[in-house]
Structures are given as structure tokens and as C-alpha cells.
Amino acid sequence: MSSASLCGVDEAGRGPLVGAVYAAAVVLGPDHGIVGLADSKKLSEARREQLAALIRKQALAWSIASASAAEIDQLNILNATMLAMRRAVEGLAILPDEVLVDGNRVPALNVPARAIVKGDATVAEISAASILAKTARDESMRQLHQLHPRYGFDRHKGYPTEAHLQALEQWGVLSEHRRSFGPVKQALQLGQRSLFQ
Image (cartoon, rainbow, N blue to C red):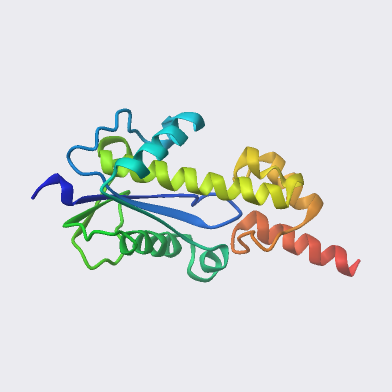
């Protein structure tokens, strides 16, 4: 099997309290010539953006997909992540022979797939997918920040930092928040209590 038929898949945004979970699927091909691919979490934001542009330009195929906060609340975060991954693979312009997924689970796909723990650090295709998923999710958080600047999404990217938890308490829950996540549930209950006081 030629390496051109390998597709890497990874996700970004399982832990945040707000917004969609993102997944990317990337088929690099043997002559992609992209140097410096690594787990997106190990790269600076500027380096991730540079590499994301190269991946979009030089990969044989790539696709980014997501599952919304509402889908996360309905399905749970694991199943929503699998859904986003499946959408990413189904969005590819070429059908890969094999899909390599970061982690220990694979979504239901029409092509052979296997999970590789810490694959984002060891498999170039998965590293590339992790970079595309992370940069797409970060961009969505910058857009959300434009709409709701006082929550600070451009800084914490929706993760449950002290600043985010304080904003939740002070300003309340947005429609983009994941209502099934503990801190958001708690903020909703506080908000309901204050309505009845």
C-alpha cells in the first residue's frame, strides 16, 4: 500500500466549555515536503498557522468538520467527536485506503481504520490533522470573541480557566456554551436561582 493512501485524523476542542468540537482528516502523500509537523499542542500559535497554510496547499486532500455544542449536549462529547471525525473523512476529495486516528477509538467509517495512541506525535498525517483541527477551532473562538468580547475567548479558547468561569458567573451562559458540561450546568442553575430570588 502506498503512503499516498494513508489518511490521518485528529480532533481539537474536547475539553472546552463552549463551541463545537473540530476534527480534520489529511492525506499528505509521499512527496508533501512539509517539514516540522508535530502534535499541534507542542507548537506555538504562529508556527501552527504557518504549517496549516502549508498543509492546505500541499496535501493531496484535507477536510475539516465539526459537531456543534448542541450535538455535543445531545450525543455526549465522545460520540460528538466521533461524528466530527466521520464528517471530516467523508469530506475528503479522495477515498483513502486506510485511516489512522489519534487516540484509542475510531469512528464508524466505510474504510479500514485504526487508532494510534499519541499518533499526533508519531504519524505525520495525524500531526497534520491535529494542526488543521486546532487552527480551525482557534479561529472559531476568535470569531466568538468578536461577538462576546467580555468572555475572553481569544485568550482561553473556551477552556475552563478561572477567567472563563468568572465570566460565566458574571455574564451567564451563551447559546454556544455546552450545557451538559459541569461548570455550565452550575452557572445555569445559579442563573435560574437568581431569577427566583
